[in-house]
Image (cartoon, rainbow, N blue to C red):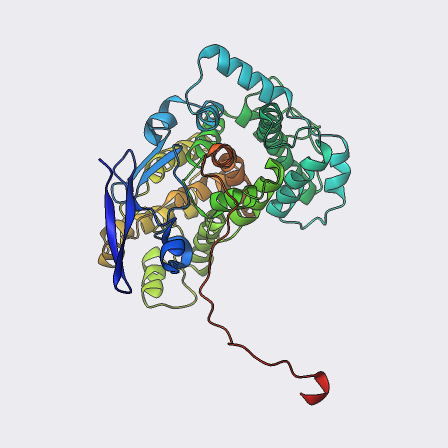
Amino acid sequence: MARSAELHLDGRSIELPIIEGSEGERALDIRGLRDKTGYITLDPGYANTGSCQSTITFIDGEKGILRYRGYPIEELAEHSNFLEVAYLLIEGRLPNPQEFDNFEGSITRHTMLHEDFRRFFGFLPKDTHPMAACSAAVGALSAFYSDSLDPHNPRHMEISVHRLLAKMPTMAAYAYKHSIGQPFLYPRNDLGYSANFLHMMFGTPCEPYEADPVIEKAIDLLLILHADHEQNCSTSTVRLVGSSMVNLFASISAGIGALWGPSHGGANQKVIEMLEEIRDEGISAREFVERAKRGEDTARLMGFGHRVYKNFDPRMKIIKKACFDVLEKLGVHTKLLEIAVELEEIALKDDYFVERKLYPNVDFYSGVIYNAIGTPANMFTAIFALGRLPGWIAQWSEMHADPDFKIGRPRQVYTGETLLEYQPLSER
């Protein structure tokens, strides 16, 4: 039975339909509010505003639940791989063996970049941040592959999706290689998705590079954990830009720019910088925490708390185990890990953290893994973007298939000057 809420406003009442999701989430449908009343809603940061109905990702921040298309993140992390998860997000279901072979084969065969991309990267300054390079390179795909840009053409979209998934690791690796002055390596069709990325990142023409299976698994796991996360800043950016009917490459380029921010995808880089600061100052984790609790500018806690999760981040438990597996395999015992473990123990017991629900999030241990395998801090967010790619694509595709699709156009409450009379320059 249809349900609604009643709003009393200016001496009259209007009904607002109630929409209920499959997991019990409820929303007031205010689409007719302005037409019926002349009022709009004000919600800075959109913390209480639903921009769409989606079947892709479910999050329960109070219970620490994350599911892709209904599948718990814990099961996907244990049993699946990144390309299968990408298929699940984009196509809406897990593939059968033949479908997966075709999908994996297509991605593998399209990993090479147009040779002119070597010149493209060559023109960038050596100190270009990899996220700037990746955003520019993804945007440039619309120039190199202008034959398949029509959002209304299913075949065009399939081609663009496969090209983007295939070429993004190559572009990210090229951005890194350019920054350190090493030659670009061609992708190898005999390697899996994550192993190929590691080969292009850390290999050289001088000797063969073989990715350690434990490290390859950890990178694949990180990509899975980052694959989608509902209507976050970068995903909302992809949807908003895509709502103008611009092509997929331009939309994803904008999403990469949004992810770059230190309050979003750049947080994992900030975690490592925090751990290094504690190490270099020679202070204990407890001393740093006490500084942060006093609000000192020299102590900002990174990797704790989450906009959505008010219990624990389910991804953190998974990545913590992977972190220890990688360090054990490498025989590495770093001071950064010691500090990270100590900070986590404090956070789980200290009333300051518990009362504010500041639990460690996925960024906390992912940076330690990247650091341990030799990844520079400025590449952390580029790898995050690589993982988030299938989620962005799935969200962009879902938006275009939505019968309620329309260009995004938020309203505002104007608080500026009222009507002013123009004064000629000579009279001012």
